[in-house]
Amino acid sequence: MAEAPPQDPIRRAARQLARFPGIGEKTATRLVYWLLRAPQGTAAEMAEALVALKDGVRECSVCCDLTAVRPNETRCAVCANGSRDTRTIVVVEHPQDVGAFEKSGEFRGLYHVLHGAISPLDGVGPDTLRIRPLLERLRDGHVQELVLATDPDVEGDATALYLARLLAGIPVKVTRLAHGLPVGAEIEYADAASLARALENRRPV
Amino acid sequence: MRLTRLAAARFRNLEPFDRKIGTSFVVLHGPNAQGKTNVLEAVYLLATLKPLRARRPRDLVRWGDEAAWVQALVTSKGAERKLRVVLEGSRRRAEVDGKTASLDAYFEWARAIAFVPSDTGIVTGEPARRRNWVDRAAFTAHPAHLEAVKRYKRALDQKAAALRANVADAVLDAIDDGLAESGARLVERRTALVEEISPHVRAIHTMLAAERGALALHYRTQAVGDSVAARSNALRGRLADARKGERQRRMVLVGPHLDDVEVALEDRSARAWGSQGQVRSVVLALKLAEMVAASRRGGDMPLFLVDDIGSELDRDRKRRLVEVLRELEAQVFLTTTDPEHLVDLPKGDTEFVRIEGGKLY
Image (cartoon, chains in turn green, purple):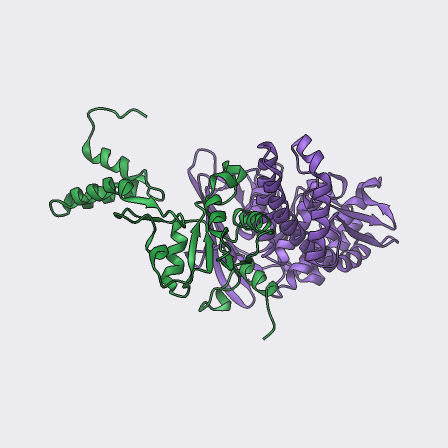
């Protein structure tokens, strides 16, 4: 789309911000007015950070998570950390999912980021995903367990089922993340579908 | 569930109104094309968030206006709530007591089942009509059913896209695994609903039709088995067998999107019956049994809506229908062109509302 040459700077900036997902024209305009009131240099700092983003970030050579470009290091901080349990890998769809696991502090193993899920409706097949690098990691037989932590929706399930079939011949334990009630939430407020699934997946105590 | 007050603005051809309702039976009458079905639309929208006869929610907004709203005071499970539905363009917002509510929260307070002339198609029409009826009834009784329907639909759409894109067998295998699983869950739920509702259908039909012969429902599926796992296996096997044909025709040829509910009266398929009266009795029995099944969740009876009762039922059936509805203790909204024929409605518990030129009198 060609940019209309002389244009109101406020509208021009707002239009750019409105390209973000989840940001409409109204919010974008509010942000622009906030920027106009902000101290000198704020916008420049932001612009510089945004410009540096693409060149400053790469995929980890092992797990494919996004990581800051560092000299003499092609791995992300998790893969480069010598104290992690390298026998267990949690497989997720998106880099954000790694963040969720890390924030919990409950998992000491490694990750693998697929960058999506199988979805013929969106033209995404196994070849689009980082599956080959995952198979590379399993080759030497060191990894004992693969936890498939793709989303519990149709696409995430299809991806997990695809991987489970693909890995059937490889001597590695493959598990799927359980789903049920959110912990700490009150049952009273759970939605019907989650409750139904939690009931179905009940287990003896 | 009881509606004690109903109001609407910029809704179809109706003049703004705000009306108290104190009876179990509400008869909306008046000449054709004056707005009585629109009042029924308003009640149905409030109770189900869906249009009754209009195709899209936006068709409910008065022509030339941007937004419409309908609101009501309802009592349900001993509590009173104010429900409000706002239609704005193609968007719809549901509120409980002035706050935007999730669907789960909203449907705690609102439920209705309607009987409209075209409903006879549930018995005489294509299998899709009966599948829709089962899904609707299952949802009214068990809201988690909606999730099962949506999930299977999504899996089916993905499978269709995969066939169109001619993806590798390994990908189709994985998609079929998920399709079989979500299909099995859907079939398990539908079968359970049909079994739950069958005795009520039979009992109500006997009361309504006063004919001999037991009415039987049977859910017909390829996903046979006595558990989700067994059904899933059966479906998965069928999908494997159908792979070649599905690839050729680029269509999903196996699964609950092709199932049917057989409605039979003494072993004769109801679709083959001659009498329209018989068909109407059966459809009414299905709808009323849905009421019973729904009321067993939370113990609250949905509203019952009948569009154009005059053309639908003969005198005897009308009388027996009123008896059944009184026994169910349901609140009922009816439209008709000639209210004089509704002599069997309880005198002290019926309100007649005349609608002319979009005005309620």
